[in-house]
Image (cartoon, rainbow, N blue to C red; front, side, top):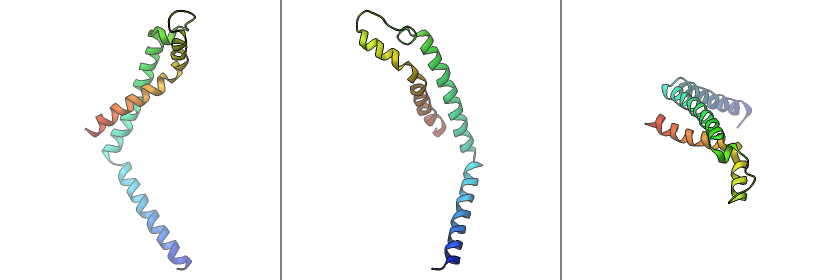
Length: 99
């Protein structure tokens, strides 16, 4: 194998890859997936904010009472609400886009 053959093989692979990406990027399913991701992230943001605001475990730091350590741990994890809601919303979006 010489350099010209390697270059020709590389260009053929590159051309095939570009064609595949362009076909994929112009398909309606691609746009449905992008829209599903955007809606899922926006919905997760709204749900996480509402949970953090309305659920006492996330909105008020516990200072005493039953199961204090558990409630403090849950309160400390309130910053993960958006991530958890995003994962759940994306899982639902996958089923919506594939249906």
